[in-house]
Length: 397
Ligand SMILES: *Cc1c(COP(=O)(O)O)cnc(C)c1O
Image: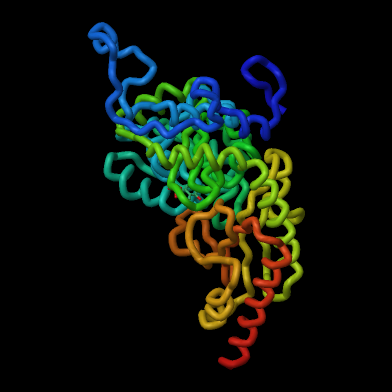
């Protein structure tokens, strides 16, 4: 239980319901309206010259963006929160807030692939070197520090391969050296892990996922502690970052139900994951919330819950068998992103782009997002898929 501004205990459900809302400042209407705008008028020359009123220009802030930043900031326990036009934009803005030519950054090898592409394509071009590290490095991160190390970027669990990082150990190593720690916390959301409370300087969300929650908008957020806030604030403004008004509204709308949605995603995903563990087709289930899974102990120590995304490794199958399973699923859609109300499934292979570690598991990896459908229907859908897979195997041999 956290405390609100007046020091009164307040649960996460109350926070997502009431954070960033002030109905009586808007004629009693419950939801913050969508303020669309570029120009903001100043009533006098004195105020125009001083540029000191609350709203100054649509790109900076609006009452709509303020509402979502307030709400996310409360959940994160942040000093400063800013929105970005996507999760990737939040990642790039956050990293650019701290680096200059000649710096090195340490990047987890399990990171979301487009983050890696940003480092390799953009940071490399401006003279910032990215050094990838084993996500399981823990306190061993200290051995990778040099005089040029500016920041450590973490993502836990990795959103394909589900390594759990020892965030407190990384923070303990980095802090005394003045090295910033950033975290992509999209999987857990601030409801299930609170990075800033664990000493992380910057917590990043692809709000596209669980905050928006309905697969209908792109949005990101960056929440910082006090010492990181001037860096991110300056850079975000300088880069011209401005999340769309409609997307921001959808973020607010989604946030209100995030706790109940996540609760259901969590329970259903654990149930489906447990069941998949018993299936002969499945070699391994990578879900940090499952006892016996790698990373489970860290998850139990640090996290407050698990979301709906996990990976399974199938025993080796042919492409034809895989297609037979995936092409005719009724509830699981095939497509990227996740965090919406619907179930998704995608095959992946992360062995091709890793550089600090090797991904040498045999068989076919499938990432599942468990949506809000009934678990019995989801199991039946997957079971029918496994049957088609087996049939395609026997017809081809
Ligand atoms: C989707 C995702 C992102 C990027 O978010 P977008 O809103 O799609 O740009 C970043 N990190 C993780 C872990 C993600 O899953």
